[in-house]
Amino acid sequence: MKKDIYIFNDGDLRRKDNTFYFQNGESKKYLPIEELDSVWVFGEITVNKKFLDFASQKGILIHFFNYYEYYTGTFYPREHLNSGFVILKQAEAYLQEEKRVLIAKKIIRTAISNILVVLKYYCKRGINLQETIADIEEKWIQMENCSSTAELMAYEGNIRESYYKAFNVILDEPDFVFTIRSRRPPKDKLNALISFGNSMMYTTVLSEIYQTNLDPRIGYLHSTNNRRFSLNLDLAEIFKPVIVDRVIFSLINKRVITAKDFDSNFGGILLKDTGKKKFVEEYNKKLLTTIRHKSIGTAVSYKRLIRLEAYKLQKLITEDAEYEGFVCEW
Image (cartoon, rainbow, N blue to C red):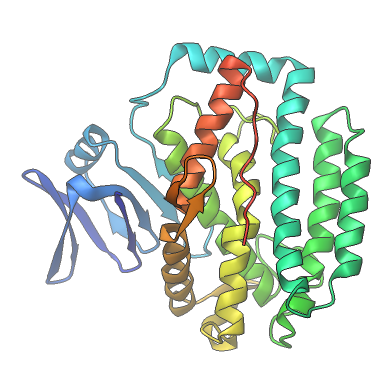
């Protein structure tokens, strides 16, 4: 499996013959070009055309985040696997409202299933979450009558709000209390973790879509508009509960991340570099964790599962194949 490299320091990314290196002051670190999948940049770096040309040849994505933890964009090499046929089928499915809603519902059903998996996991461990589970299951039944993606998004938002409030019961940590979802900037430490983790997941999914014939600009649950990408936002909904949220619970419950890893800045709360590094380390470890895949009968990493989900969606769009989204089993 190819690796992701995370850069938090300031410096220069350069090409040297047939490889890359990152230079920070006098320190120079060579990057394993043939093993490289994506580069994640959190520091201030400079690049040149020679470097970008080589990255494009090798199909390496470079993701940029600004000081405030926001994803700012991706150097997305030419679409080396894009298929005209698949793109036409994607657009056709988007333009047919009935089919678009059908696909969006399948994605949402899978995402809610994984939310319930997380809640029931903690419920079995003695945490009282029955009321939240019942509330989400009731909203899920009501959601089945939706006939537009706007209605689906509204229900999804209500379900996720109920779910996020359950974080207070799961964590029971006075430094990490959820009141209301806030973004740009997050208003508390828990929102800062959720926002950072979600940005990581959106970007991971984008990298995996790049390895398929799908075009990330055409999504179904999230509208295709002037935003850069939307399909990655769709597929990320499935994996956020079982990857991002479990990472958050682990980091807080084990006191790996504490109040000292946050800063108040410009009316919001942000992760310090120490907190970002701790989150990225645990997040990457989770992505590389393998579980037994019941359909193919072998061990598969969570990162690979994301790409498999994209393949399944592609088959649904192009072949009307039955789509059964990934629901985690613990």
